[in-house]
Length: 139
Image 1: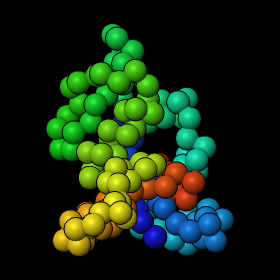
Image 2: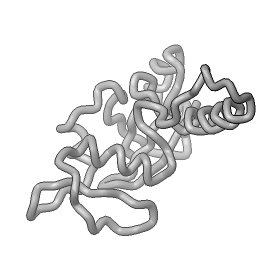
Image 3: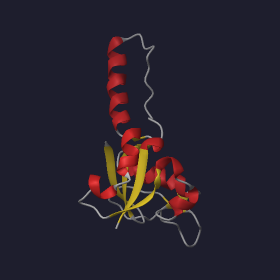
């Protein structure tokens, strides 16, 4: 089970689990007794309207925040809350949706293929698949 605690406009906990565990994970207290959690949505159900509820938005321009870990929000450049959500995940060294490293199965050079495989596996371990995720607010 993969999890990430992050801070945007709200404190969030994102949990990736297997399909079998997905229903069981809804029993929040059983898995995370150290947190008081409120279910926001499943990752696959995340919409622009839901994301607006936990992403910073400029009152002047209507643009959404660009997140950099450990730096206060001071840049608003994203047109959608979902784009901004990707940056907050990236700021913590994770990825949302698709592994950014492409595995090159047809690489003929063994050393390059091995190095690529290691990079791909590392990125894969830090990639959240929305269909397997649940997003909670930490209250």
